Image (tube, rainbow, N blue to C red; front, side, top):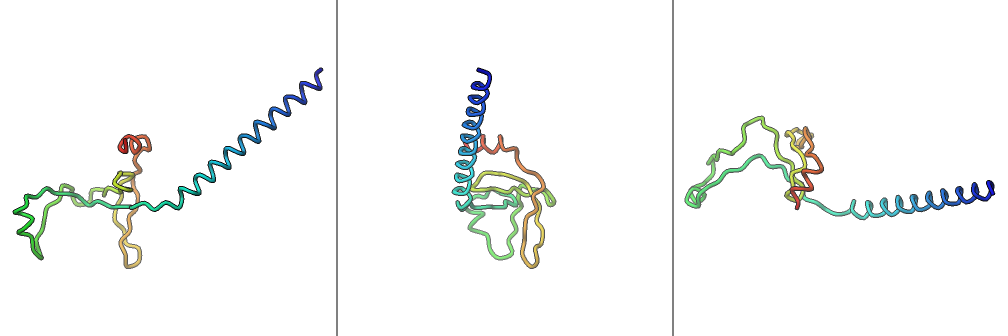
Length: 113
């Protein structure tokens, strides 16, 4: 009987391995589908509240004070959800953003709910 039990155990292990591989393949396929979805990345420098009359008085050269201090990290948002904080860098002749702090994934999920 020992040999039959050993063969049965091996068969169960092989079945478990095949199921695990199938799940991993399905997960990889699902991830590939998600990889092609476009998202919008936004970098928020700061914000301010204005009255309509203040808005109407704006013209070239007007300055509005924002709620953030110079040098503070900027908010990095994906589809309106903050995922990180970062700082502006130059990439050739264009602006870029360096990630300096990633928001905890659990907090990101909570902010979407």
